[in-house]
Image 1 (cartoon, rainbow, N blue to C red):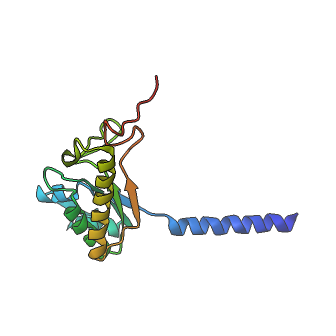
Image 2: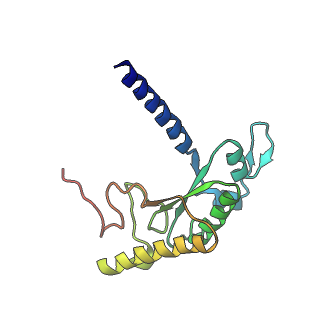
Image 3: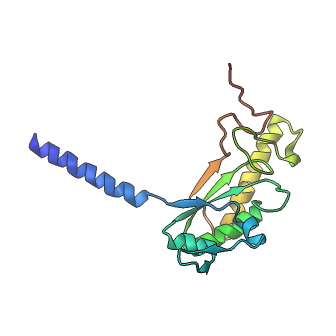
Length: 172
């Protein structure tokens, strides 16, 4: 009995060590390009101005999350913008997570709008749109030497996505 308790304790401790090795500290940097374009500066604890991703890396963050939109009005969060930030993160040894919003701007439980370019498309065409957009973004990253560690499909999609076509209406 005592030997099995020790074995169980050793296995539990080994699992705890493995879990720590797999733990990721990250940040959503989806707004970074817009902030930089507006002249936003970033500072460390001593008040010294720093490049944002280097600062995050120095504070032991190991990953970044990038939202990607289909055709954003200002160009931020499109596939080219995502590529540039992914390359910067990769250069610092950080992992990249893609968050596909499948819209032209922010998506959340209260809004999941269909991208303007996809409006009026049939269900069959919408499936092709989703497939093509996803493949284009990932192919662009891969062609430039970036392999995302994770991909998130949609953003806060508890009520579905691509409304009205994909809206999940809850019964009262």
